[in-house]
Length: 98
Figure 1 (cartoon, rainbow, N blue to C red):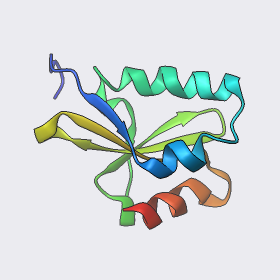
Figure 2 (tube, rainbow, N blue to C red):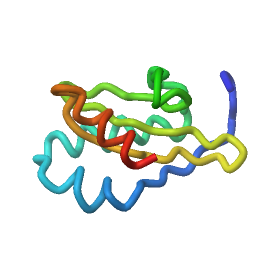
Figure 3 (cartoon, helix red, strand yellow):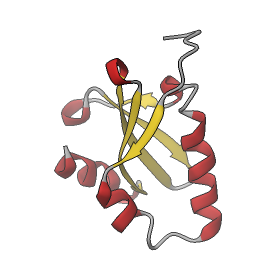
Figure 4 (cartoon, helix red, strand yellow):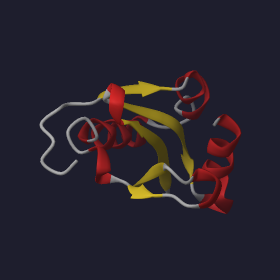
């Protein structure tokens, strides 16, 4: 995908909008938004995950992580979970949602 000129569409699982983002302050939300928007043109910006989340990626923002999946044939980035890395909380959350 390097050099890929196609732009991806960002989609969120409903739980990300209705739960994950609700308790975050505006500053963190803005940082997350800017980072997610970069995925539109750079879907491989994140780091690949292993284990049960193999095939998914993570983005780091301070103490927070964004777990996402690239759906290449549809040009979609699906945001699975957003949360703190503390005690691997965000990864447990993502595993429950996939």
